[in-house]
Image: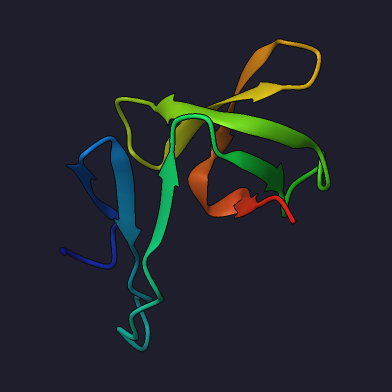
Length: 84
């Protein structure tokens, strides 16, 4: 990974993300989302909004999430968490 940017890889339909901090270069645990996973927005102005993971965008820092009303919206991957 260069300069702490997010690195992603596709693995049997899973999206794997591994991030590093710029300052400490400490690695975060790997988080994987698969199409159909229930997620929730853990950050941002719509925090708490539930949805379903659809796919990553061309820029792997962004993902398509289908909200309960059926509308697909783009959100930063770092804002996503697994729904409880």
